[in-house]
Amino acid sequence: MKLLSVIVPCFNEQEAMPIFYNEIVKVADTMKECVDFEVIFVDDGSRDNTLLVARELNDKDKRIKYISFSRNFGKESAIYAGLEQAKGDYIAIMDVDLQDPPKLLVDMYRGIVNEEYDCIATRRVSRKGEPPIRSFFARRFYSLINKISKTEIVDGARDYRLMTKQMVDSILELKEYNRFSKGIFSWVGYKTKWLEYENVERVAGETKWSFWKLFIYSLEGIIAFSTVPLAMASVFGMIFCLAAFVIICFVVAKTLIFGDPVAGYPSLICAITFIGGIQLFCIGILGQYLSKTYLETKQRPIYIAKERSLD
Image 1 (cartoon, rainbow, N blue to C red):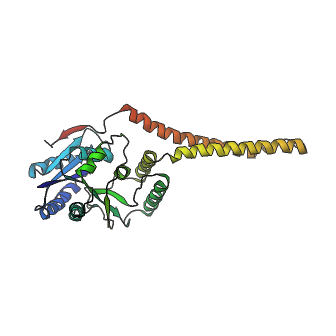
Image 2 (tube, rainbow, N blue to C red):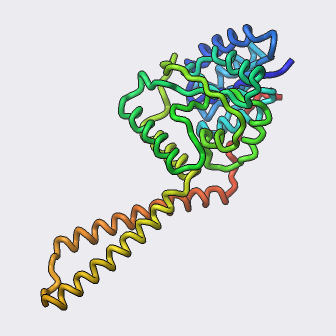
């Protein structure tokens, strides 16, 4: 009998976990003739009773395992930890809030077994229930990153997916500290099928993703999978060098021909301020790439597990 591992990152999700457990058990029961289940809750340094609920579910059902971090390392680290500890022949990643419908696992499993895909991934075809401003910027992000990156990231793509062990092993070979899983899943390749579904509301609790956190996360993706911003900084430099040369020639010619004194103090100040802003912007781009390189060279662990029940 094959084993299917379900990785569930959790951060302050004590209310949603029991509801999720009831739903995933229903799916496991419908698939018990073809595959065994293990569910790995990854407690990402929660400050509520998430770990306590994970222990209780583990005592109740030995198919339930858990890892608890020493502090909050972020969802990307939780995903990596789950992938690293999963023992299944097939490995799924999904959220505990049931925005990733567990019932789709049946179709995802069939897609891998019967259609010989390496990965069955999901994407939302709508963002119903999200703030309009967040939906707008999310779509602009996907449009931008697909223009400046060689790695395609599907609009509306979720972390919710089912993968073969071979694909997961390839993902684990990428041990970078600054992780952007949506890009990593695409970068490693493999034959992928996309399942589309309508957006689903959370069953309990509140989202941990504020607009600012999503913005920072989007910058992580751009820096991780594109060097176009660095090229932009170089282009800005060349453009302003050329513009400065043209302006110098114009001012010199005007003075020699007409004998006019150099005037225009307000416009000069505006030009200096504008160019100074562009310079700081370009230095900021360089700083972002340099900071990521600095963090990678430290070779710190992606996560630290304080407690686990996987043995």
